[in-house]
Amino acid sequence: MPLIDGKTDDLAEVARAARAWHDGAALDDIRQAAPFVHLTGRFEVPDHDPARLTESEWQSMRLEAGELESAWQKTYQALIEAAHSEPALRALYPFTSHWALRFSTTTRPRLTVVGPCLTANSDGMYGVGKGFISEDLGRFATAHEAVALAARQLPSGLGPIALGG
Image (cartoon, rainbow, N blue to C red; front, top):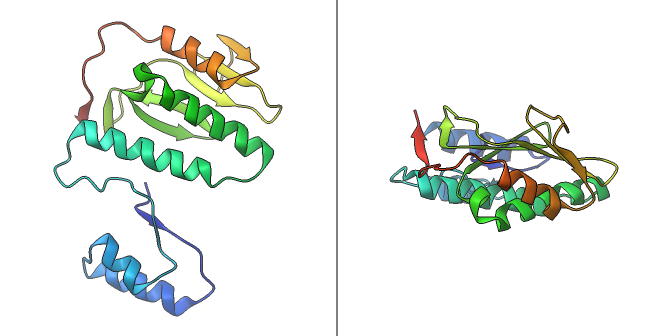
């Protein structure tokens, strides 16, 4: 998972960022060395507290989704925001792959997948499925409907998030 990203046409700036990373500079110092660098907000939790890592991942995911521009990507953004607004899902560690939103009871690097998979589709619909990118539990016109079903599908008795390795 990226801790930093950014875009530049200046190869010298890329070299400054790489040198700072290589030298063990703090993320803020890398950003100062190479102003094109954008801090993703991931894993900036010095004590590796699982609950704070989960909050950090949600923050990063919401920030990234908020920067998307196309109509289809706005559908994805609505899904991320709706999932974050649901306390049962917000308490889980979120992760994505292929624009599908999944949840875990452990943080990276060893994820323990729990609950259904949520998708934001290019047709503006939202899917909920038992497997990866399936819609066998339903298709919905709103993100909130999909999220509500996903929350109901969670097993009972989930404990606090644990470190995943």
